[in-house]
Length: 84
Image 1: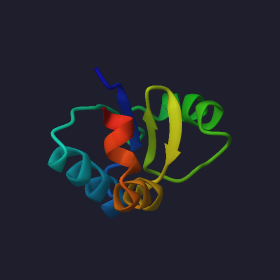
Image 2: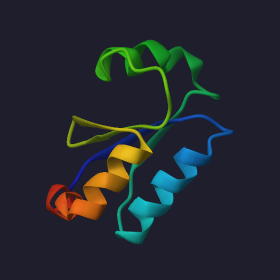
Image 3: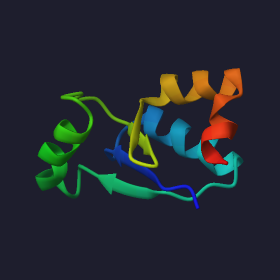
Image 4: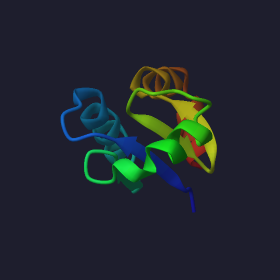
């Protein structure tokens, strides 16, 4: 089973777009909302190479990046391969 984690914030249109794209692929994910769990920000920074924007998406513990990166993987067909 594919493990997907998404770091998000409450007011984030790109977070919503990323979740919609993954939902359209029939995927589920663990959402780490930094608006309600700010104590996990350092965790995100460490796991995502210091990237401070959201969303930050990890698939099977591999950093994908943000929504634009996810959309590019989808466009190229690589996302389906990652999702199995």
